[in-house]
Image (cartoon, rainbow, N blue to C red):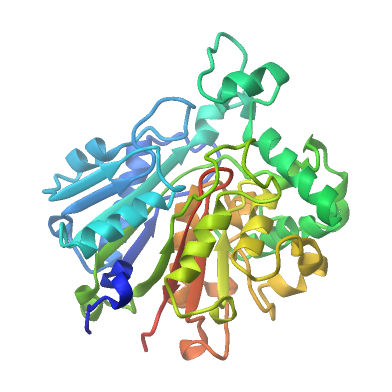
Length: 412
């Protein structure tokens, strides 16, 4: 295939050639590096490669000890464990959401710095939390001595220690301005649980009703327990390769149609110019500026649900409905249902039911769907290839962090 880039769209020179995932669970107490190597080797094999072929390495956020379980494995540990010979590597916290590391890899491949990049994301928050509750893995929320810096010096004195508080504030503003209801937003959590029932790796698979959702304890109004993602242990890996490698794969490549990484507003959780949306507004706008496709072409959406409201914001920002129209658009859940929905959403159960694997979990699921590997949860669209969806969108991050990818698969 030709790798000529139209209008400077460098991402067309890259493909997702393989994905892998470790065991996923609650409090499985496996070493984070062990989980990472399991996912990495799975992804490398899926791409038809060996560790000797990997000449690039990328991760988010890199090795850090605070908050506990949020990371713990960085580029250096994986580099050494797999004895890789690298031409390029990158790891760091400051990026446009968790998918920023994948976009970095796409840039590295497109500019010829390397041929195959192993991208990985590992969490072990469930084991780090143990039996101490979620506050134990939240900065400033676990008691004891903690000296806050940056914006948290202004939020902690008011008890706003967690993103649940900050996102809850944004959701409350959206509810106030547009009349959004908990029943409407709850369809995101209900759909995730229904999809998780078909995913053998999902953490919570028991049925959930709307009454269950409405009656569970509140966390930060209007967010209830089921609006909050589930701390988990697990690692996910993807291989970003030069587009020329697509013809050598044992399966169709996931072609990178467009990326969105923009942040054109203020980089703040609580001082953004419009608190009914987030930085994802700008990332989504950039995505559509870099492609001739439109929201109508998307057949499956894997959109970050650290909290249900973030998913609602992604749906609006990506143009599946208008700004402020997310509530009525979600009413009843039919549009986002796995069976017969116009836009099947978070088909693996998302982070609300499948477990908090960050943006990489959504990217893994998008490729799973494009390649027809979904099993009982496989989306089947007549317009897709062989009944599979042809175009998927992935969005990750909330608050001032947001990045998205538009992927396509045109294999047999």
